Image 1 (tube, rainbow, N blue to C red):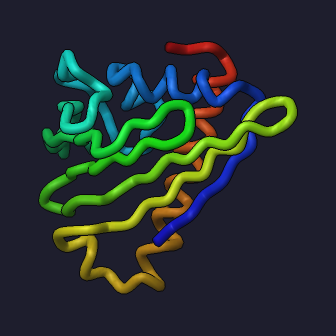
Image 2 (cartoon, rainbow, N blue to C red):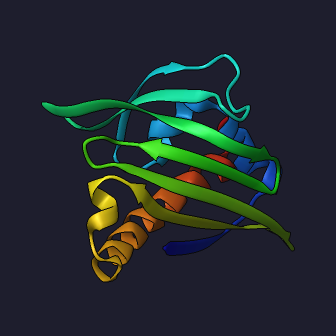
Length: 145
């Protein structure tokens, strides 16, 4: 399980405003290349983001499902990217003086990605999620929503 943490210069509500706008998903998630559709009920649990991953011409259409939504504290997402598999992502936000701290926990939960030994899988996810949190900070601190 990879855990990545970043301090942000904004209120937790700003982070959740970005998460709540499904159309911004490829702007902060490394690997997501475009949005095809956002369920009208997003981010209610059970709702879906229909996105693509990869770069042309190697683009796969898949989806991310909201499993838990408790703003401005916690969100749990199940990201699908078959044939690679599925990953569970937990976003936890805690207020601190001058802003907040965002903790992103991710691990493969199904498919071939889960078969990769943790000692190899975890560093790759961590590097990716450092950039993911960097992008999320730019959007949240900049007031995107």
